[in-house]
Amino acid sequence: MGTNPAPGGRGAAAPAMGSFQLEDFAAGWIGGAASVIVGYPLDMVKTRLQAGVGYGNTFSCIRTVYRKESVFGFFKGMSFPLASIAVYNSVVFGVFSNTHRFLSQHQCKEPEAHPPHTLPDLLLASMVAGVVSVGLGAPVDLVKIRLQMQTQPFREADLGLKPRSTLGERPAYQGPVHCIATIVRTEGLAGLYRGASAMLLRDVPGYCLYFIPYVLLSDWITPEACAGPSPCAVWLAGGLAGAISWGTATPMDVVKSRLQADGVYLNKYKGVLDCISKSYQNDGLKPEFSPTLPLRAVLRSISPVSAVAGCSVYRRQVFFRGITVNTVRGFPMSAAMFLGYELSLQAIRGNQAVTSP
Image 1 (cartoon, rainbow, N blue to C red):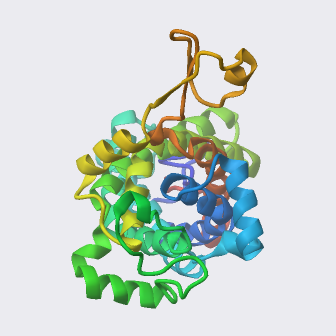
Image 2: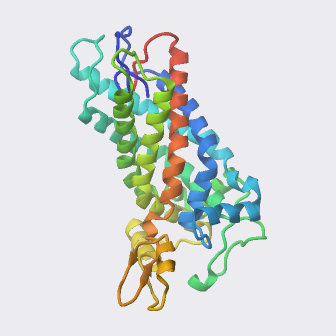
Image 3: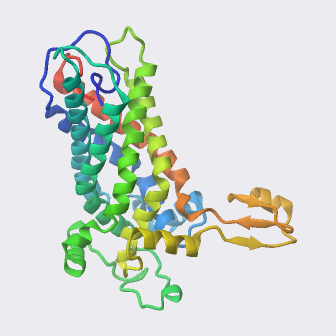
């Protein structure tokens, strides 16, 4: 975001500007493109961990993808997100910035003054951005995940059904356009918004924990004498905000990924609650009892441990699957997003103090 009235700008007031500014959308597009390029490989790993089968942990997933699909496997389906997510981030940042500016100026009597950042304004602007993001982002995320997941093995034994395509055969989708056409043909236009309710539950609180920490952290890092945050401060505040947001959003992100990915072959889930229930029943906390299990093996386990009548080792809770890669990926991806946004916004506006969130 920018400095006043959202992320970090302090110092002399800039020339008065209207509450609606198109520059925020242009800067958001540039930042969005940067974040996709930086974060896509780990996004692929995250999706495979959450909705795929046969991966033990993050490093196992990385090795498997590289061995079976080479380095290009980490960029499978990136062309569509690169074009669309840049537009998506443009809208999200533009909506947040202009909404926050409108709310701040509505409360401030002097049009050229920089109003302080208030939590209610930041919260409301973040929620509006989260709601708007789902309208654009749900189809984008759906296509991205379908393209990422179509090489996954199909568990016929679990479902008793024949797959449409399997590894080594012709993939279900030939590309983004074919994927969209196939979804519309088989599931209707509503199929493009499969998982949208889970995405709404993820993004509204997720963007609150994305924009608000960034604004507060960049203000805290930036010295009072400075007119705005330095690139280093933007990078650090943006990265930490992304890690916080993606880490806390993981449970609902798992549900969204599963809802969107299972349609590659068939629809196993009827909705959000059905997905949560079935995911917990099939992959939730399941004790693997072994009274003779060595203590050393228990301590090596990556899952929570409980000593019950000997030793019971619990598998990782399904709703936190991929939380490590989500959090790690969130830092560089969001750092690139905010840095690209801030620097491009300053370049667009020249030497003028940045006045948008």
